[in-house]
Length: 244
Image 1 (cartoon, helix red, strand yellow):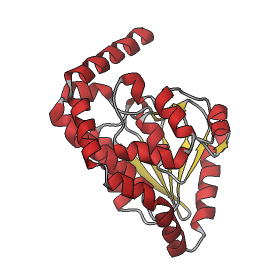
Image 2 (cartoon, one colour):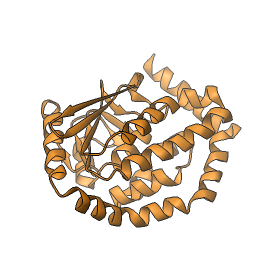
Image 3 (cartoon, rainbow, N blue to C red):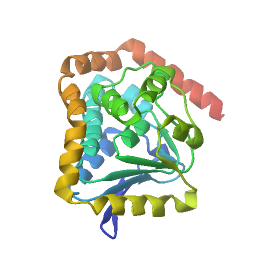
Image 4 (cartoon, helix red, strand yellow):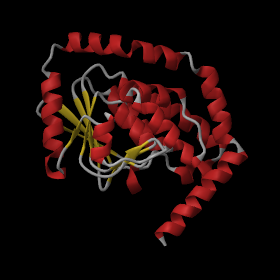
């Protein structure tokens, strides 16, 4: 589900989680485990036409509460694991980065995008954000976070760049080279100084995430409700009709 390779002093983590790299419990656990074993600069990308198209909604419907509870815990844990990595993390957004995929990109220090669409579409599905996802998006996207979260829009690379959602738009053929070069340059700074500076910048966000347990309990109840399940089923049916 994840490939980890090295390019110089940079670890390249490639999501290979099946169709559109949709986020399943297993993929999230692989992300967490991978970051547990990494200590230097990292580039995250995806295979195919997607960075990650977000949560695997079919698994949510099929698994019910017994799946959703550990899934949401792993989702927040994976976001925080990437966000708090002590060394530079660069997102090489090779294609669609939607909902949870957008948050994963937000958890990185820098974002380069070549193609696809990016946005926070949770409201279009009818589910609230876990605290970690919303707070990390707020940190990464600044004033644009409200537009993304409350509008559920998808943006082209050029539009995302204009909003400050991505740092650079690049050609697909140049994406990995430029992402690795950037990670290499950022990784050349003194590791302890980079970690300390990143930790200080992230501290208010991490404090709000830590204080959000009550909110996350309400988020879990919402994700497990029959009303939410019905909305997701409707969304899946609409997606299937569009493809047919």
